[in-house]
Structure formats: C-alpha cells, structure tokens
Length: 107
Length: 127
Image (cartoon, each protein chain N blue to C red):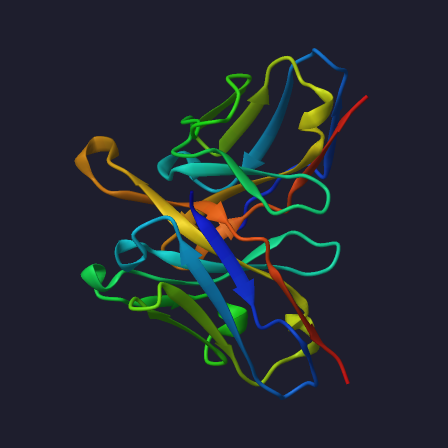
C-alpha cells in the first residue's frame, strides 16, 4: 500500500507562517490535495492540484509539491486556522490515500 | 449550492448489514464522480471507495479493508449515492462522509479531486 506521512502536530503564533509537510514515495509525480477539518466539522478542501485554491479559500493558504514532499503553507496564521489538516493523493494500486493528519495549534 | 446529505447510519451487530444513502442537489449528479470516506472516532480520514459517472463507465474502486463487503451504487434519476455494507466488523465503526469530485484540466488531461463533503452519518458496529 501507499503511505503518506505527516507530522502529528505543529504550532504557530498568530500572524506567523507555518508549513505542514506530507511525505510519500515519488509524491511529486502525483497531484496532492489538502483538507482542513475544524473540530466537530466535515473536511473542507483548501488546496487541490498541488497549489490551486478553491473559491472562498483565503490567499494565505498555498501549496507546493516536489520530489517526495508536498507542503501546505499558511502565511499569517489566524486563530480560525486551528484545525486538523490532511494531505491526500491518488495511488493506482491503493486508490485515494490520506496522510495521518496534522493538528495545527495557533497559540 | 452543492448539498450532500447522508443518512442511514445506525447501530448494528458484527456480521449484520446496513445501507447508507447520500441525497445530493445543486450540481449535475449524473456526470459526477462520487466517493465515500470514513473517520473512526478520534482517528484520521480513510477512503472507502469511489464510483465514476456512467459516462466513464460507472466503475467502482474500493479500499482493501472493505473490498468484497461494501458496494457503492448510484441512482442518477434520484441524484442519490448509496453504500451497501455487508458483514460489518467493529472496525467499520465511523462517521461516513459522502464526497463529490471537482475536475480540472492540467496538461490537457482530466484531473479529478475530492471537493465537497457532506456532514456525515454515524455507523456503530458493536455486539
């Protein structure tokens, strides 16, 4: 099976920049999505196709993907960004694969 | 506005069956790819399976843990997605989300990505 690895948790001070990584074998060869899940809510797509933002997602969210690592960056984090973040990619053998999730704390 | 409303979640014993539904509106369901994703209590997201549009053959793909036990189907006349779950196990306990796909065309090829999620329905499997 194909695995995507994320750090369990990261923290950031309000207004600072934070990056969340997602690692997988040759991940850069696939498109990556990122989902935000606030406590008690359904996931929301924040990045697709490595670096595209859906309408309604703030510009402070950006993404990149190269080699074995995809990265979600939040520039100028706000309290409302506190959530779990999941990366996701398609593997031809495994199907849709999610990373284990990263809990972002804004403090 | 895209709306996905899951229903059918319930308490079942191991070995029993359950069918989930996802009623949709606000988009062209008959041309949409759809997935089910689940989340066990306190755990991360786990993809369950996907069904393509009939234009793309209506084919299904499943995650290894549910292959042979779960079946995804669709009724385009009702804009509704289904998940038939048989031989339930305690590890199937989770919130089940219905998800619709968006599409883009990078490099002149069609790319499908999971886009809008429903609010989920809870399945509990316990003796």
